Image (cartoon, rainbow, N blue to C red):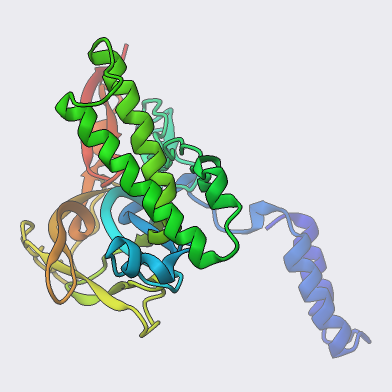
Length: 368
């Protein structure tokens, strides 16, 4: 303890002093917080780091279908012999699911790498989140890119009014318009049949012209038929869900409704889709450390993961959607690497797998 601190300590401990107990207590606090660092125990210099745990990021693709009835829907059965719904409706369909494996720091696997003169460690590479990446080597983290959905360009919808004849537009009632439109649809179909059979009054000169004429007739029929059958539009949405497997078992990952689409896992309006985790037990259980054993002199706090394999299945009550195999550190063990790897005669470069925390490469380096 420095001389100034010793004198100050003796002063406040004097029995005959008139300082009250309260003031003496405050002086004790000042002594603790203002004393130089030489008063505290010598701390070991080191670098804190984490080992990772695996996270599954699911990208769920859902198709939405929107049906809108046509203006002449009530007359579809009378004139076109078709039963169509007269109510708008929206439905959803689960198309596919993709999975990307990510890594996040495991707060239960926090260690300190000791740095001292006995071991040649001049670089420790960590990610921004504190995850250990390499020793005596520079490593750049590679982030798993987000899956971005690029919708296909949509064609402009057809306007039935552009294909209506003057008689249809001037009809005095909806019923009369529906009747004339149905006749126009039948006339278009007759024209297509005559072209295909080569019986039309004005036949095209070659195959190219025939294709153009048939395509135009198809567009006219489609536009006018929409007035009876309605229109159907579809689009696709992508939703991301992250899940961290921690133990074997089954739980609801999400729920899906044909009428509402993707809903929360606790929303009973949707059908449950389960995630089932099974440990493949590829890593043996480590033997317990004997009590009273001597500490390893070469232990510098360097730990790496020995990850295990798990099988993950996504399914509902009827079918299995996908099955994945994962190498996950949280289902493995932790291994200690000796400080002998970094002695003064021969050191090492170690690069870890950023997803699992296991040793990816290890290279010996000779000190000059």
